[in-house]
Each structure stands twice: as C-alpha cells, then as structure tokens.
Length: 149
Image (cartoon, rainbow, N blue to C red; front, side, top):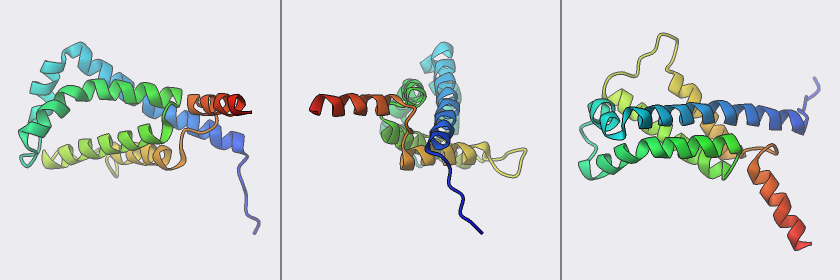
C-alpha cells in the first residue's frame, strides 16, 4: 500500500479552519461574558463551578480575567498570531474548564463524550503544529526574513 501525503496547502487550510472554529468559540464565549458583566459572570457562573481545592487567591484573578483572556486567545487564534503559544494557552484553558466541570459533577454530555475533548484536541494540535502558512505569524516571519537579506 502506498503512503498518501497531503499537499501543504491542504494542511494549511485545515489548520486555518481549525483556528477559525476554535478562535470563534473563544472569542464569542468571552464577548458573551463581558456583555453580561464580568462580575456577574464571576459570581453566577464561575464561583458555582469552582472546585473546592482551588485557593481563592488564584480563583479571584483567574475568574475576573477569564473573559478578557478568552477574547484575546480567540482573536489570536483567528489571526494566527503567536500560534503555538496561543494554542498552548487555549489547551490550558480548556483543561481548566474541564477540571471545573468534573469538580462540579457536570462533565456529562448527550453524546459519547464531552465536547471539551474535541476542543482540547483542536487546541493541542495548534500548540504542537502551529498556525500554518495562512496566518499572521507566517506573514510576519516572511517580512523579518526579507529585512535580513
């Protein structure tokens, strides 16, 4: 059997679609939290899901900064800016969401597994591979190379 390889432009297109879907998820989630009020989000959504073992000195700044962080991560993913770093932060955010859901015994799904597992694989892929050639990172790296030569 021959080994099939994908054309680099197909891989870049797949990474772009991955970034756009995950980025929109984060961006829209953050915007919804900001529109509803960050303090309201913190007290009505964040605190009830907070595992008891998380110390308040960590939970308070994390909970209040989460909506802004989601917006920044979403925008960076969409643009393909700081791709691997943003993918890593997205991975850590999704892990923290999942831990909170498990701690609140809310990690249940109508399907065979929780949707966060799918989001986690998308974020992990970007953390490991990067944003692809259809990204702001790629554009900026080309400009830097031109200046050197």
